Length: 232
Picture 1 (cartoon, rainbow, N blue to C red):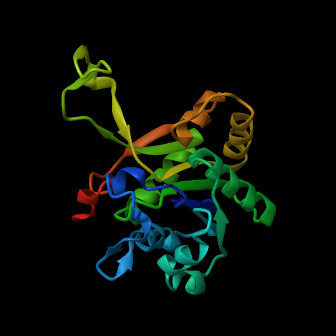
Picture 2: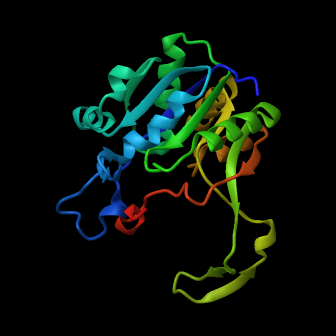
């Protein structure tokens, strides 16, 4: 394919609440945990740097953890052939992504598309990144998707099954997600002024009348949420 000029935001400004579970007295950032000899964040970032026409990278970080984020990225900060900027995140993921978008806009770097990826997904492949970007050039936005294998149920707050959902029309969405840059920036700015909280960037994009296509996801590209997810 012909690669469009694009940027990347790697989100690593979360609190890792579920990862720490009951061990909140000594919280650990899942993005800083080691896989072999490198951090989760390192492996989540590295594959993007090999994609042609990458122009700018932003990594968001939690307040007070800039130095630790630099350490987690290791030599990527100094060996990357494109600018790699650390941006302090906000109160939630949505705010952090907007700060990253505004940082890229302020840099003046001309890009057509933007990829947004969870810093806690270290097993992302170059092939998946390329597939997602290619799908975005068709629809305007794109995300990798996996069809669901388990039976899907709706439960009450008390834990009782109250409805049975047809899984055939349901998918699970992963990152990276890709969007036309001007449109995702404008959608995020509009979302900021709404009273709605959005769970991911595809929801923001479609809520403002824009299209998102899906490509085949990869089961290995799971997100680290709990300690158990660290096992390869």
